[in-house]
Length: 218
Image (cartoon, rainbow, N blue to C red; front, top):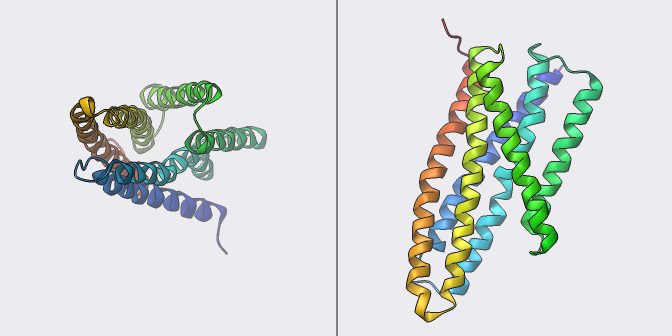
């Protein structure tokens, strides 16, 4: 018979696959965003594609939290009541719905307010995981996962700022006098995104390694 812990392990693996795989798709599609030899409309299509593919990593990051808690509960590392677990899942799913809404909805004043809420949530999550990694009496491998997960959240926030630079660069392309500056801004943003993405992939790979090997600190 398949145990509940094994099923949560499977979900955990699937989330890692979609996180890393979709991030690769984002990286490859973004290469076309920076190509000044392509028509602006074509580059914008690739930018929209990039944002759509990015829903995979955004979804995986959020769901990693409650799924990770279920795994930790199965190992006896974390002891939460059924009510606390239910509250965690409700909060995570509500945050996931918010993330999808922000990705798919048209710009508005309400959207700007919801974006600030989403950013505040991500900052709180990053601070919580990094803080727990430093001060909580956790096994070495779990503390490492917490620390790297908090770093991954921070990197995701920085990548979102880079996407904002992309948007600003495309706005400059509408005016012939600022087109060169716009292309330079897009290229600079793409270079920054590449460095951040590579660092993020390394963090996620290390998280997976720690979870599988569970090394101790002697």
